[in-house]
Image (cartoon, rainbow, N blue to C red; front, top):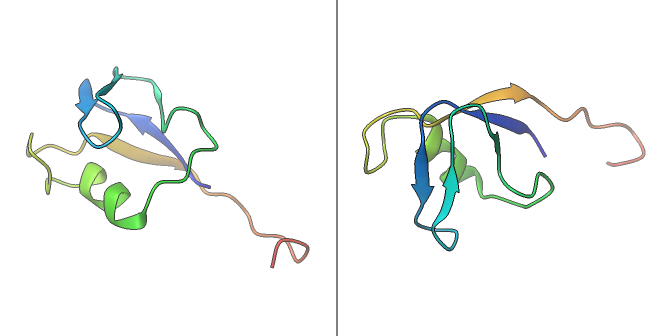
Length: 67
């Protein structure tokens, strides 16, 4: 799973109103699975706040063993 950094404080209305603050890692817990659609929504202006709320900071490298 890729790691994201929170850019703006927000409450995740699709995850039991979990509060995220600027600088937090998204999602909590880090190993939680989040759909690509949701990640796209939060990382662009296509959300209720109209702001990018998260930014990709690290992509998981897929090894041959994981494939």
